[in-house]
Length: 419
Length: 165
Image 1 (tube, rainbow over the protein chains, first blue to last red):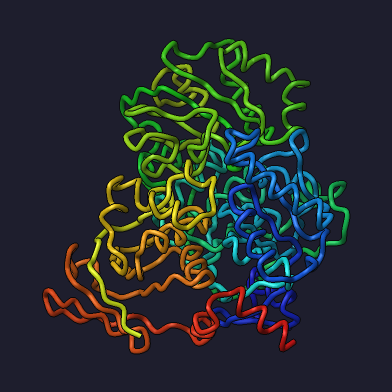
Image 2 (tube, each protein chain N blue to C red):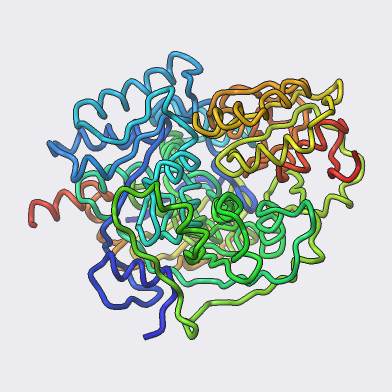
């Protein structure tokens, strides 16, 4: 029976030859992930269950990244709960400060998520790992508590939507622009319960970092996950990182899709999502005059070395506009060090930016760059809901690193060609 | 079982950041979270909610983050159930897993007003607006989800299975 890549991975993890969309399955997981916001609830439930041991201490990742370095006493207590649990159960993948990165940047970098895996995370952007050809999705803390006991999770097999990207992307067009454009097209619930399968010549030539940006934001269209079939680019990324075997799946040519959409990217400009929905997109040339107070470059969406290189290439030789605070957040210690050795940090500091340690911080209005009443930010993050980065009257505009960097210099939202 | 309460009405795409803003994600106490329920839309709302009240909303309720603090805050504020045109998938999943009653029903976002008295019959899915007399029908709940509800949520369900195992 012809199947999609998502169906094949789910079938393999349910001990079946094939599955059909709509059926409910119990599937075995390769990794369960939680962070400092979601792990404490899962740990509380696990402890209350009376179960003595986790199903596999090598298949649980605990990453305190949201409010870390601890922003206050309450957040310090949340990490204490994680640290205590990790120690008690000898959890292999607990990341203390110094090793900790933004979870969805860190885990692929460390080779902990691989093609063909089923991964669940108590974080909605867990869908990022679909970029490696895994079935990976966000769940709640209760799911993680249950999975830490059983090693399994229940899923309704989702239908897939096939997105095909053709043509030649413009100079400044990145994965962020492609996914913003797509969400703008289908809407923030355009893929609810479904898998967004990204294909086509443009995807085939995209580097892993851009693929991760695209899969990362599948949730912003309501999707269960985004997924990209593994190829040589995937294998180049994974080889040398993977410490266990993995399997690459492809969709069959005659697999059934709920819907198919094609985009010629040649005409797509860098995109900006206006408040207060990620689907509220416009080409950068249609933005008009939108002055900004802050620019944030980082997050699980765009905090990788390629993103920092792109931002640095635009900021080089410039200073940010007097009214703008520029915050750069390398996504992991490895990326931080790489940015240092490549001279990127020098460029950021020279442009009068500040460099944060790896953290989710400002993206969710946690700390490290909160907006005051009426303030406006351009950010390479993933959500621009009301109050997302601070006060309820503040505004977040989403874009890729090129537009965010250029905007920091311009003092208003604009593209790199305006510099 | 029949749920009855006064309606608090919201629009489409009510996201988890307005249901429970991130600064409050430093606790797991449902009552404390409940004090800030829907604060992103109306900071005074949680004080006005009476135990048993019902939230009615449009499309894609609960979109955004996977934070289980969102259904916890709604439950903690005293809300008995959420009725919406549709739900975002992680919120939908979390509500069943942790035991917040939710119902999908076409037409409620236009047919029901804030302040109306409403009842929801959990077994039949019959939803009645007692203020204007309109009747709606909740989408049927899949058998597995009914088992989850009967067990009291995912944790009791899997522990029962483990024991039976």
